[in-house]
Amino acid sequence: MTKEELAQDLAYVRTLAEEGRHAPLVGGSFLVLWGVLLGVAYTLQWLLLQDILDDGGGVAYGWLWIGYGGLGLLGVLWLARRVRRKPGTASIVNRVDRLLWRTAGMGIGVVSVACIIRMFVAHDEFAPNAIMATAFALFAVPLGTTAAISNHSWLYWYSMLSFAVSAVLWINLNEPWAYLLAAVASLVVLALPGAIMMRREPSDVV
Image 1: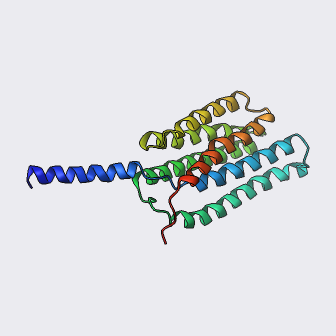
Image 2: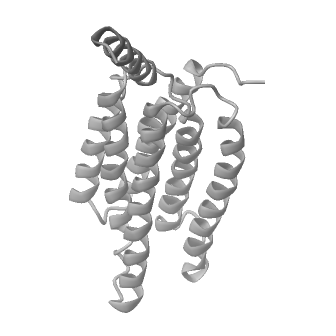
Image 3: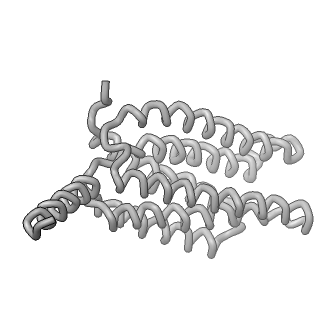
């Protein structure tokens, strides 16, 4: 291989990398889904805590979050079919973005299970409050990382806002109004950037 051929190959690889870096993000619909679901769930949690809604002796909390998980799973399965038809799905930035959100979701899942176990074992009714504070810190990681590795630098500000919300939630961990803050923040740091991404998505591949 000559130096000229090697230079051409390197230029080709660089072009592919640049194309992947500037590919449109196609995961916005998932952010809208989880942002809206969390916004509704946190609002209902606040209504239960304030006795505006009857908690049925505590049973309503369980059904609320079981329903949230069930609707989220169904929504993800439906949206996965939609996203597969989008060009750019296999680009590096979209693959990294999916991996980051999947990892963040696993982290939230681990914290959720641990907090629920503590609630029953240690009789600590406030233990689940740590879930939402942790979640917003974890939301900030894929938002910020995706902003750094792509040309979607505007996501950086949502990452910083998510970190700020997490800090406020940790400081006011057991305050009922924290769930209202989390409800609004879910729409702002998840649903809003997700909607922006969806507006910039390319048309489906037919």
